[in-house]
Length: 186
Image 1: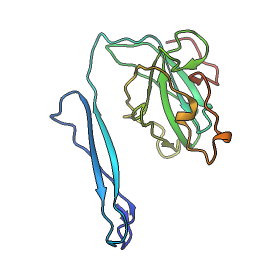
Image 2: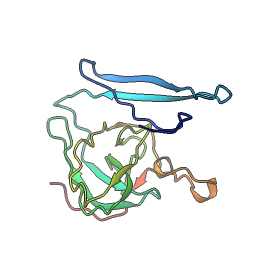
Image 3: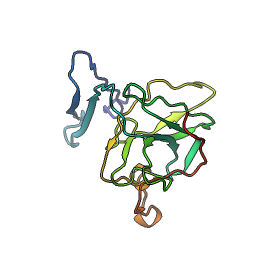
Image 4: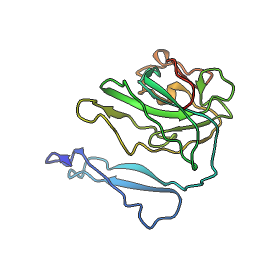
């Protein structure tokens, strides 16, 4: 927690998933300033307790790291489901702030997350989170788990940082393009 005398700053919220059943949980956190003349801020919070289905298989998944412009950074890992999970390994990712995305490319058009394809993002697809990568401090980043599910459509614009104007961040008509070559599935 890094807060000034007025209560403004950074707060860290954590949850304990132990004992909870599979599903999505929603809550709100309300921050009330010390100054009664200032409006309170309410933040929506979503937490998921994933289930495990050893038979789950949504086809081959391409796991990528993308920058705020939607460009693939580092390697692309192509993985198959094993016991209902996709285990991936990404390398050659330079220091920076990125989003982690995985999904199928059933029509083989090099776009992930087209309509009808499986798709997921770290932490959730609805609220993808930037991860900070610094290979000199943490060469391996465990715990970057996320759920992949069949969705209607997602675009690179949804994964980018908000633009100051819509002309600089147009919404593409397809999913998220894989912009780096990749090898055959392992």
